[in-house]
Image 1 (tube, rainbow, N blue to C red):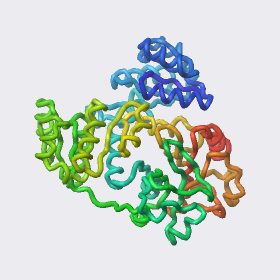
Image 2 (cartoon, one colour):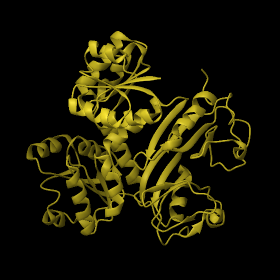
Image 3 (cartoon, rainbow, N blue to C red):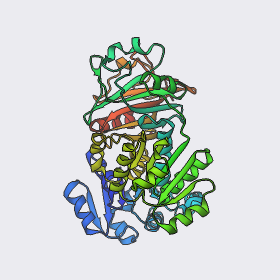
Image 4 (cartoon, rainbow, N blue to C red):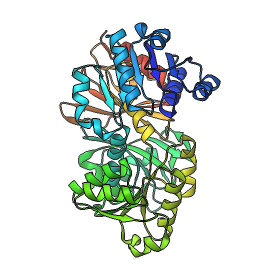
Length: 454
């Protein structure tokens, strides 16, 4: 599978890194010499210096042999032109473009059905707002992923020392949870991701990742000594494009929303386009302003400025002022391991949201969706089990799955099954697989050879 990536920024760089680890044939194109040098110095992929909107550069990179084109530069226009050139040169190449501007929101379908015939359009700002919305729905969660149209949740939650699961051996879990169908897929402890066995013990403050049916989510939350209380009052610090999209969504949900924005012109624009949200002109790090707005009474504060250091500092400040829940936007992947150490658990990253949306398209097999866990340490993949697979027709305990791969959920005829060793997978079941990063190539081989018709 040959993949062309136009754009060597954070999204392109990290996707290229994943493809290199999985021994895929990837070529990355960028006219920025520093970006190209960074790729060459760190990743074993082919690089081409030049504009991805140039047909000459596109042919030099091998567009005629490429199965997939990823246009992920920071410029919507460059991404659109790159797809147009690819469509002109190689109409069979599948095209995925990152398009962020709201000006294009109403034209996505036209871009798909007409020139440049983009197969998938990804808006990271829309995706990150969806992530924030899911985190708000489960305020105690660190990570929330959805599968099977929302019927299955993959949740990461910090283990409360008061929970009855604290200091529990996994083998004793059924006795503690009773009839609740709870499958723990992974545990993050001191930034190390562990796939636990029956002898492992859950420790207080572990981040526990579990699979749950949507209908049983509240019950499972109570097991962790958490309560999914409704969110009624939200403060958004930063009224940029993501802040605006989030405020518009919260208005529809009748959530009382305030936006703090220090640019007076942007405040005027927000006030003109929002109906119910209160727009405040000021600095989100101003303690007096925060106190005047009774910040301690807010359910959640979401920091969405374009400066991640400001977002981190404001999140820490409002926690000091009495806010229990914060959601913090960061862009640098290198910051991820630091967040929990300084007390910030709920973090969103637009670039990671874009990567998650792209992942399902670069995986072989009949993949329906894929998300990253703990930055890039693992993935959770939803796929269709095909009739030709060795995984079909026998108990999971008899299936030789690679180390680091775990089947965590099965959806059959609208019914959700939390699997055990005796569960038998049938053709056309939708299976949810947890996989450590180093096991992804083996998992993909299974999905490509065993789970997919060619």
